[in-house]
Amino acid sequence: MDVLYFAWVRERIGLPKERIETEAATVSDLVAELSAREDRYAAAFADLSALRVALDQELSDFDASLVGVREVAFFPPMTGG
Image (cartoon, rainbow, N blue to C red):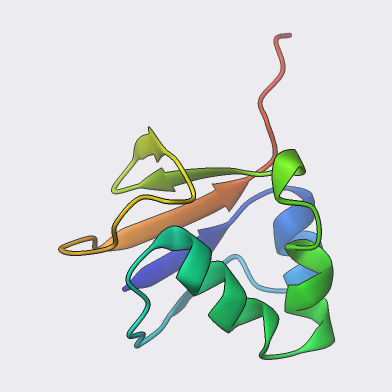
């Protein structure tokens, strides 16, 4: 699956996107798996209340299933402008 990172999430992790193989069942499981990789991932996912997630370009929740998902995107909440 493709994992995309936007704004400060991308800056902390140092990548705009990556392709990963995972056995994670939910977004929360994926976050735990990524956070365990390296400190930079742990820092990016330290405060989930400051993050939003989209699955296949649709806003979702961290308890959502990853079954059949091709793309996961993590980004901070959007503000108007």
